[in-house]
Image 1 (cartoon, rainbow, N blue to C red):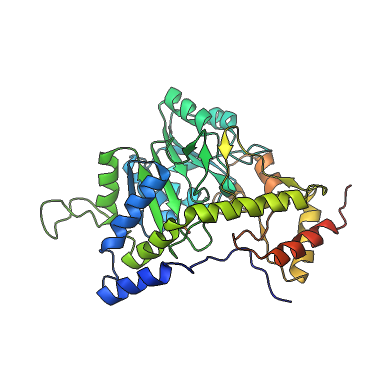
Image 2: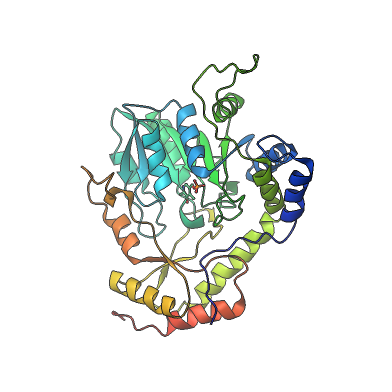
Length: 366
Ligand SMILES: *Cc1c(COP(=O)(O)O)cnc(C)c1O
């Protein structure tokens, strides 16, 4: 019986050819033709005016917060139910993350809870589009406009996700993406900062490249970072981007097949936000109880099927535990959520094996 993994990138098309082009030309560092090609291709795909590549999604968040001028003394409201990078980046700039709860159906940040947590120190809202869904960026951008706050969109899990026909990442002031190995398209490690105006994009490029001055060699006019993407990573990204529509179509099909096959079980799926076209990054289910979650994961594991638990809420982790309220919805989703194998080429017999185990599982509540 072979193991079924939660995720697996597919590098079987032009990826190898483009990487070999880097090798043969010796352009393997952070200069070379694939950088610009990947950036402009990605900007077109998202429908944003500017996209700057960086070496991962976490530093993309760091730069986004820096260029918005967020720092010590500022508060940034962020959902607790997210990958830890969204929260840590707020600390990197010296600001304070303020955790908001999630909605029970879409699992996205609750705009009303965000509004309740606004104080005179609040500078920004960092919205995360979770598991391929979209957070309610319409409500959030209205809220931010009303309270004069910046809106940052963490789109790491939402490549291909649209809201009212627009790609997520185009609603706020700035947005970030990740191309880690398990993201919808990958560069191995990689990220992108998508911004609305040329000045912001210029500042992202300035900071990612050691704060190098425009007009003088080896002269650095701010403390910058080495956050650049390599040409090799951009080569992989360029090849991935050429078939992103195919990947998204297959992921959508897989998600639909899971939903149909598990319709008669007591499992809940993520509900789309109004106007959302999901990209189904991770097919995630909620079991009726936390005990069921753990027992079902055990049954799948015995059958050679890898799963992941939903994210632990950040406010329950040691470095963020102090002084935060309970967030009942985030805690409940975290206790009952499972990410199922979600890569777009999951073979049919594997899907059959997964759903048959879930369908024959003995639930603690009917
Ligand atoms: C993957 C991810 C990131 C950043 O990931 P990197 O591994 O640094 O590229 C940030 N936020 C969310 C929500 C993510 O899922």
